[in-house]
Image 1 (tube, rainbow, N blue to C red):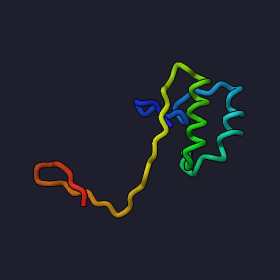
Image 2 (cartoon, helix red, strand yellow):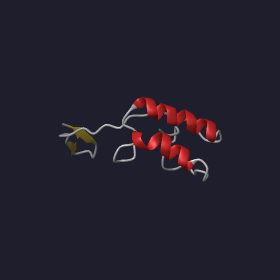
Image 3 (cartoon, helix red, strand yellow):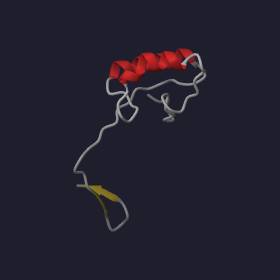
Image 4 (spheres, helix red, strand yellow):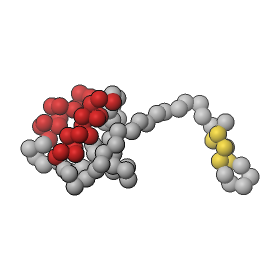
Length: 84
């Protein structure tokens, strides 16, 4: 969940002391080992909560990150890259 300039709403936003317990109680169990959401719905709910708690930031977008195994990138003679 990030702004269009990829500022993370999870790790790059300041939280007031009174917001932290609510955030932890509501969303901590939805975060994976990398501190990212695994499921769309909790990420969307967190984006909405972030919109209401700090209207000076946003709009927030829920995006996906995917790991692709066994991909090789080669540099060509002209310096451009090519996937295999």
